[in-house]
Length: 283
Ligand SMILES: Nc1ncnc2c1ncn2[C@@H]1O[C@H](COP(=O)(O)OP(=O)(O)OP(=O)(O)O)[C@@H](O)[C@H]1O
Image (tube, rainbow, N blue to C red; front, top):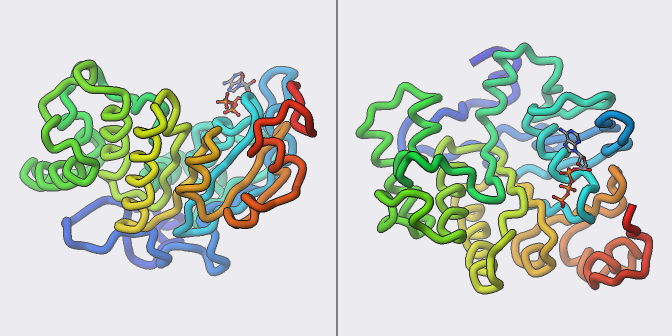
């Protein structure tokens, strides 16, 4: 592993070695200030459209932070900056103390392996069965033997309740199962940081609750820094330690979930109540 990356953590590399080992992201690799990711004065425009306009937010290590905000306000663009898929026009994203864009390309690739991402639809490969989908990152990024891969994938599938679906193709399982398969795949490299882009989209309320329970359970089991983008207040209430509200490319509220739920802040109140009247306009 490159120095700039390995120097930030104490010991645990992101690449799994054996199933019994403690996962990284348990605080050992956090910065001294307890932030896994620090986003500072982040600006991003596409053409003439200024999406992120000086965004500042720090993500507490080993906590679940939920990002709320109206559609088109830059939540997914933020996630893409965190994982190093987009380069800021201005500002910095520091991951465990390293500015992603001061790393070399190969160091950035190593840094990306510290992230797991759960996309809205699970982003599964339609040509592979669920087992191979979940095994994919291990086969691509590690030198593990197939027997080790089988053990890890089997464990992760059991954790997300998909032991019986290993040989099914994505088009043979429900939307909720696809998300759980995507979750298992996001966990398989034992990430320090897990990003969820609207994990509850397209799920009915019961399946949303079940997925929330799974997120909480997996976080309790494996620790790490979870960042959840959602529009759903119940999801926010169920999974979060901290809540941030984005509007027009800036953070307009941040606080512990209990405070957010009781907050009189007009942005938070309007978002939580779904009220059309308030500071969160259409533009
Ligand atoms: N690669 C890109 N090129 C041009 N415009 C982009 C690109 N990526 C995002 N945008 C624009 O940036 C804005 C913010 O997009 P983003 O997906 O981050 O919104 P969001 O807050 O996640 O919204 P939603 O809640 O609807 O998913 C949108 O207007 C989008 O069209």
